[in-house]
Image 1 (cartoon, helix red, strand yellow):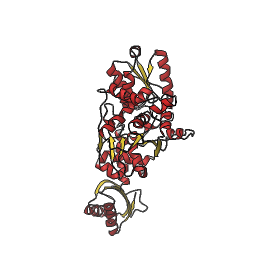
Image 2 (spheres, helix red, strand yellow):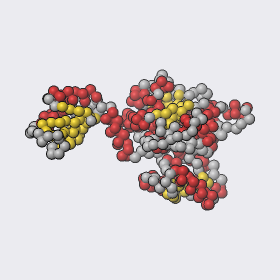
Image 3 (tube, one colour):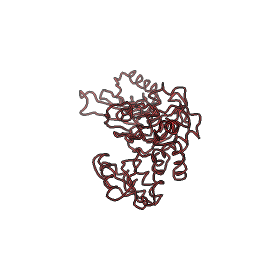
Image 4 (tube, one colour):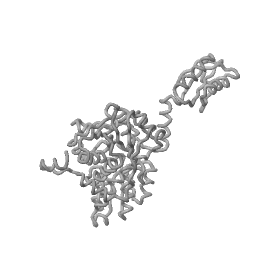
Length: 412
């Protein structure tokens, strides 16, 4: 529903294009105007042109700065003097902390006790007082509201706030200015602030341009709310930044009124998107920041033949998690082989196998040779190899070369 249509019906939309444009002026200079770029490797893998809005390049590594900067710019003098408070275990925490520091406003951030130390340290780096409380985000949020009442602080909600939604919507203005050829958008959905802000801007700037929200299969809260179903979410996910149970009520209203459809993506597709961005585009994305691309890979029928715009909305991924994702994707692509041999226990066998692999061009990167206790007989031994190859065809050639030597080899 456009702003004009809402007024005609006697209702006032929570956020309008005018609000988003005003937000863009407020945050100008405080938030980086990130580029929207096409990467050939990503477009090739997706089977259609894909333009990436790189909001992982923000100072705190995520788009959340847009909404935080706009909300803080609207504080009254009394609110500034009293200070602000927010609840977050991730990107919103750093965004509020940074922009409060820039505005000279005291900030308190309540985080669950399980929050990784690196996130606590990053938030404190921006000058915020961090309070660790509760075993869940819900408990941390409850405590944050209690502190807000007790200390007279202004609560900055991560997504269910019109000023925050308007700030997030500034992303759409920049994308269309830089890439007017965009024909469809895929936008991550956690609480819904980003997607509802972007959809609001598009409804007036480019009526009819489809906007798809994207959630992971384990946390389809917005899809369930829009369908009128009870919310049932849970389980581990690499996209923890959008692993939300309680979505924003304003976002639900906006997305429902604009007819936004939410697509679901599996964990494997998110990992694939993270790896593709890292290897193909040289872009570091957290799981939540890669789900838009994951949707294009998972639902090609919705995007084929169209110029797709999506956002890498965050890049704050743990180094170990990124390493694991890349290795898992190499295994799936057949570029790393795990091979298991039962070989005779005699001199020269290991050297022979190694030579057969090297003759085909494979690179042995790990060897486990269990000679004493693992084999079924003392006349044999177990050999486990991890081999780096160019592609699946070279892997098949290595197995064929091994079998040609009379060895029984199994893929791991």
